[in-house]
Image (cartoon, rainbow, N blue to C red):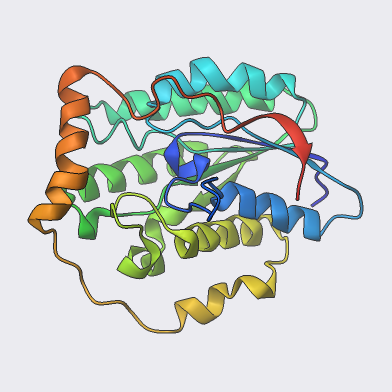
Length: 253
């Protein structure tokens, strides 16, 4: 497909948390998608990423959707709801309804193609992973079923068994690492009919065998789990005070 302006919406998954570059910047699957689109394009394309870590679905829609549409993209990617299902209580039906409303609003924009992604599944490696697995299954199935009659492209990373391997996850086991983000980008580009750059080595990594299952040690709970619980108890978010990653359309480099 031909793309000249690509905008990504979402939370830490789309921001690229877990794929930190040596200079401290985040990359992530949406950056990889932009690189793949540019590699397949004849003209320079613009890329913006409005994602902010920690955002639940409501704030993603309220803060990111209209600014994204104001950029007049011809490709929009969206993922949301992952932070909602990690809260003690969540109404899956509400998440589905709000996602459908977002898509309906986006499709009012002439010439805009929308991609909706289900996030990757970290539940095998997390405390209380069974609950997340159950909620994630319900959310992915419900959203993808609701949107199937629409002209959007659906990318079900939650059902990608390869992505459940520990080799694709960062040290916090909640966010993908560089290998995982490249795999998600490969899924998106493939769904769009855009070639996946061979130098990413996505297929070679997938065929290299599984990593050993990791243990959640006391150090892991101190560094990652307890701070997360502390933010929930105090009503804080890892994204408080943060600005969108890439709020304007810039050339892909």
